[in-house]
Image: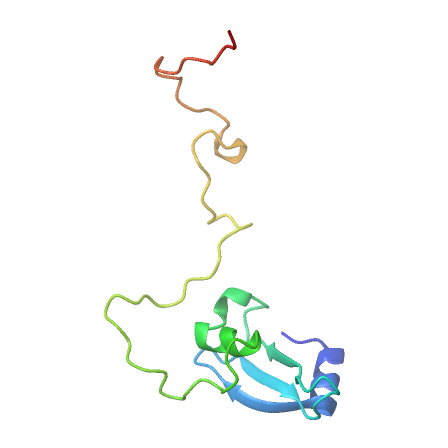
Length: 120
């Protein structure tokens, strides 16, 4: 969620250009600077600032890979596409391999097929 300063700066300098299916709102600067490249940014919807919730089309626009905004219909959805899943890094849902300290710190013993290298 945007803080008060971000809201004021967005209100003063931003031009709303679009919204995605997750409710994120995209802006660009009203005036083009001398370099000619308008600044672009996103104000995330509820649920916190999580960059992985930006769809690929808008990610390309934010990073100046494409100049035109993504189309509203955004093409067809394939059956193999999954819905967005938040990035679990740093949470209890994150993957922890066997032997990780938060998984008890114990792992299976070596099977004996490892032979350490020794220089001759």
